[in-house]
Length: 419
Image 1 (cartoon, rainbow, N blue to C red):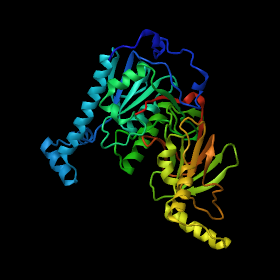
Image 2 (tube, rainbow, N blue to C red):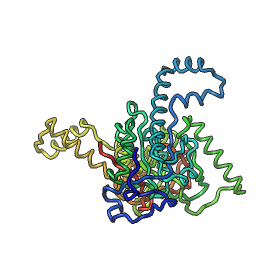
Image 3 (cartoon, one colour):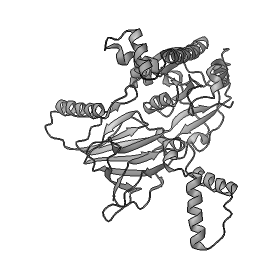
Image 4 (cartoon, helix red, strand yellow):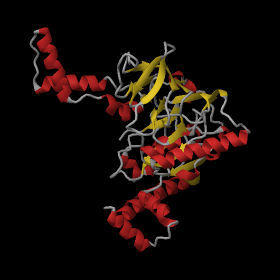
């Protein structure tokens, strides 16, 4: 790729004078064109393929490659299929790395398990090479709003990649680099959630779920071991109240709070935007960003056409009115309601959802869902966790208090490239 003319370069990182003035709209309400950029150092963070995961999982059991093939066949998985997808991913990662190196960029390839704060500090920009899950992991550790993150979908036939560049750039990454260099893109400042944790016996040490497929027992044991280690290091025999602790992760999609065992009701108290505390029992609580409003939160709250039709028929009968319950009408109403659940990624607010609330004389749910800027949750659970973007789990049992807020400082700098 030809280098951009020096006059067009907007370099990233303090080493190369990144903090130049940007025009006012960069504050977050819109995604506007920007001058081109050319980072000096890029970390390429790669996902763990299913092939790699299965190899690592059984390597210590002493299985040969032939044994692994037979085991996967017994599970209904194809060894050759997994290897093929792995090779596709690997080839696309190499394409991205070679494209960056040809452009004169220093590249550091990092596996997901090796990705940490030191890697983030080293890089001027970070490329997520995988799918949306890898992008979420990469974003969670980038605490500097001025450090850009670019997602590349390395297996577009098997991965949706909503958070990544358009799939055609997977095989044409030099073109993407040239367009970025020439400034033919827009910044999108994705709002994220920050978490403060306080209370009795809290444990701010996370369990990383990205690299593991843990059973419930393994997940709980990991949290218990982490808690004991922390208390021993602190010399504490009994858990004590702690000051609010800002956790070193940011959520790009959503935060889920609830009992680890999904069949057990989650008991907690909730306060929205400084309002009164309300005792609730439910299947858990989800808090999402605008980016996450198209993901799990959307599927929690969306209505099916059948439900809309049944409610409208009952309403029309009660009100003794005629409604045009044609297929087209029902589809429009359904689409309008579901569209109301989605909001822009850069909006400085959050959306909370109470999953399947239990209502009786003790427990209530005045609002099952809604927009807010702050949600506080006090745990009354026995074996609960607070999971950030489906990949980072924090113990969240009786006495722990979580405060979820949005801050302009936590926006993630991403790019938009048109098809």
